[in-house]
Amino acid sequence: MSKLAEAVASNDADLVTQLLSGSGKADLNAAGANGETVLHTAIKAKNLAIAELLLKAGANVNQGSEERGTTRGYTACHFAARQGDVDALDLLHKFKADLNRGAADGWAPIHTACFAGKSAAMQRLLLLGADAEVKNEHGMTPIVFAANHGRASDVRFLVKHGANPNFVDSQGDTLLHHALHFRLQEMFEGEYDMPECQYDVVVALAIAGAPVDKPNHQGKVACTFTNENIPALQDVLRILAHNRERLIAAGGTDLNYISLLHAPVQAFIAMGVDAKHAKDLFESMQKCDQQRLADKKQREESRPAGGCPVMKSKKNKGGAAAAGASNSGTQGAPAHPPMDLTDVPPGTDPSNGQCPFFQKKAQQEAHSAATAPAPASAEAPQPQRSAAPVTEAINKAAAPLASVHEGVATPVKYHQSEHVVPSLTWAYVYENRTILLLMALSFFLGSWFEQRFGVRA
View 1 (cartoon, rainbow, N blue to C red):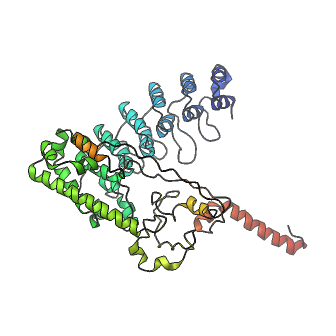
View 2 (tube, helix red, strand yellow):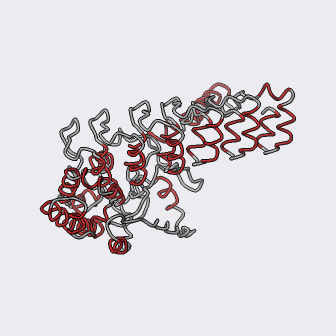
């Protein structure tokens, strides 16, 4: 590590200034052992005073990281956006940062902000001139991540600033497919428990103009899986889409699931919806919520301990669940049904934290539960949400439905507990191939020495 890098890492502004006036300036844009420059280090540590010193001395504001992993090609702007540092974004913009510059995987800073749920950073990037329609290497625009992660307010803001609600990906999936987690539903054969915050997102998308009945390349619409138990949801979305211009003109872009549920027929009529559609919307919303609650109750009653969205009652009837407890990591738990996980990215939990079999960390810690009780996890506070803009009475009525909340689980990185004997799976063999190869080599060399010289190596 250079002296300049050490000074930046230790947040020593005086030493940084001294080094920049001398030989240290040669290291200004050099990549360190981790592939990052001193500007990246300063931005990640939120040392904006030092970051400004570096920029004034000639640090390349658009230089990408040379790290060979997921952050390869990240600029300082990417790091600032990912951690939601609005002040850093302002500073970098002042020094002509390219807000739309793609990393090695094509992700622009706004992609990282949307994926990480950093709404303030996403909004600031758009206000500073970032492109709401910038695509990564897979053709995904930022609104895809906002919709998929249940952030209705972010979806509305992105649409307001140029995001296309008619987005279609390479598989033909629309934003509604992404919002209703179509691919996860498909993987779990409709048994996946969709987070309830997604209802707000589909309402926002239908009003914004996202196609409700457009099929993907498989010929399946976004509501394919919800239609089994909550068919009224598609009716609601169709009515909203048909009346979207009237709702928008009346200031209804902020409507969400709660405000629709508690609005009387007269409220819809006051917003310009004709009497028949207003009555249909009211009745469809009541049916939709009745179906949602009935479906939620059925899922909760049929779900075994651990909350796995796959192991429902209909899955267990076939007898697969009686196979044993060897796969679960807990005594007496049923075995997990076979699944094709070839399309699941490494390090990703496709159940969003609901399935114990995909929670590698939870499985490992379960082995030591008998000797050390697991720490109680505090329930995350539910954010306050508005049911505007229909009436004040609707806003008050929205409060009891606290189960509908913003935010979903993001992929978790797991570690191997030192107290656990790992399962010898292909994934484990691949991850530890170097160590296993050395062990095998040591074994064969030892055998050869013993046979050749009569001495064990």
